[in-house]
Length: 411
Image 1 (cartoon, rainbow, N blue to C red):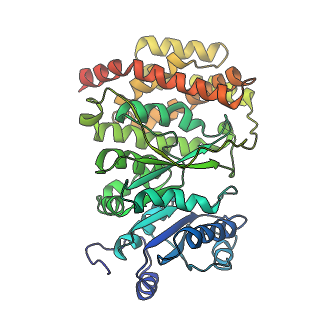
Image 2 (tube, helix red, strand yellow):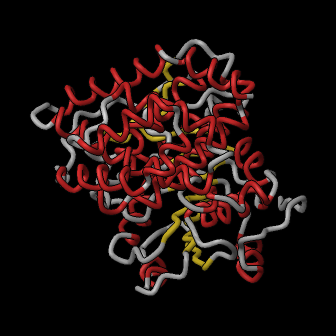
Image 3 (cartoon, one colour):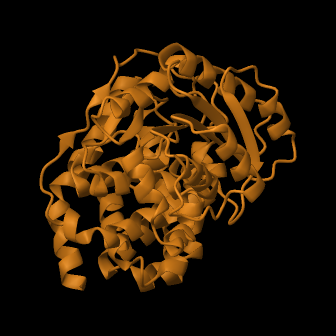
């Protein structure tokens, strides 16, 4: 059955006609891409193996929504050897991961798919069982949103570890370890909720790297079901040194996170306990690839960044926090956990007022927080470093009353 209640804003019309005539499809695997020719065929073929092994009775297709790659990503994708139908197109609209994912949601909604799995196009660790674990809780009627649960290197996912995981957990009360993991299962309930959101919501950082935190937060707050997590083992992908490559991603993710805090403030201000989101599948004991981080670069960027933004620091922060941050810039460039939490709490409420400059101020502070974590955990095992992240979460939670008071005072 084809739905006619929604216009496809991001999908080329000729492509829609093609998929509609070949459908309907029960399951869709969506792979957003931009210059991922080296890895996309592997991702597509492994996804197909998972679909055939675990869901062979359901009709499925694999869709590549591309951002205009110049390295033959789409041609390589179409050369994949699969039983599932393959489709590729260049999406319309704002260039970014979120727009690519919206286009796949639009298709899934229009062909009434039961569920969609999203896989990052740079994955080198994807396995057929990922498809089962991301889809089965949805098809069994237990949830409408499955986030990934990976084993990651202690220095992979620094945005997640320092802000997205602890803040999202204490705000909304569901402990989801990888809220911006990139590989998700989405059921029909949430597909319909996402595509029916106003266009002005989509025409923001959600069209870019803000998409993952927005999807997860929306599912926590608007789904009838609890969010699930799928145990996927290790995530091996194109890892980036946080001090050299994550600036834009940080801005888009954190900006979206702060906007969502304002949107859902009536909900999170009344949440005072945390529950673990259920994990589907056995947790695998795997050693991920090592990551090298340039600590000196992080410290230098923190110190220089705070000094360069000193005028904004003095304008945005309270006197006490301003003094502490300028002291960090004049000393070693390390931002400890207590200072970090104070910064996040204060900036979260001031985001709307100082949007244009606030994230630019936060980036160097984030570099200092990341450097502090790397130095502190340099000689620790993965398990020991994970306990440090849990301690940070605990500190965030202990101070939630302070966050609520701050928001109420400034309303």
